[in-house]
Length: 268
Image (cartoon, rainbow, N blue to C red):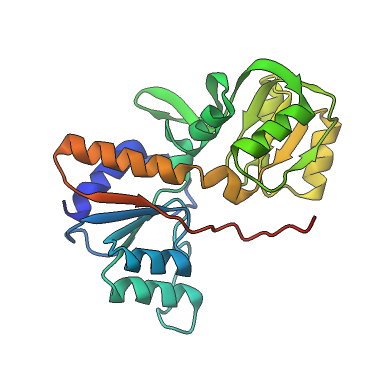
């Protein structure tokens, strides 16, 4: 296939119109007519991911986070961003990002987290658009198969996301039956979670005063880290591209990045 064929597949899952206005998804580096034989899925275009792509002879890196956000005044080896763009260009590797459009898309990051948790009757948390004539938006909420204490729920989430630790806010004894979530930094939707009767809200990048607000709302809160709530989409993207390529009659190799991109460390 060529790059434009792959783009059609990717935008079938996460159309660009689903992205937030400030976002920058899409093809950010490379030629649309480039032949694609090997695809690497990853969360970010980091130096280590680029090295991994070079080692496996990848033709394109499909990520969640965009390599380029704002305006670029120059592309040179004097900046980290410039060095990455040059490395991609020198090795003939394209870069395509699926960001807030993938957060919103059905089967995207938020649905993936909800399914990992095991939520039932999953619904959209903050409706803002339509996808396939269905109301859609950022975040999800749903019910647990069985109610449990906040402590037990947080412990279960830690294990399911394979995290070293979790930051929690709220009484460990509180019963959790309904859960709201927004992958990445999504504290702004905690009010919607409360209105929809959620006992607990999961997101990341929580600030101190935001945690205080959650306490005042009597809402249990979990910061499961930006990386922890979003890296879960990498293997999902791999399988989706593989399945859709086969349906379309294309023979390509798709690999999920093995790079650990978690930037936070922990001291016990």
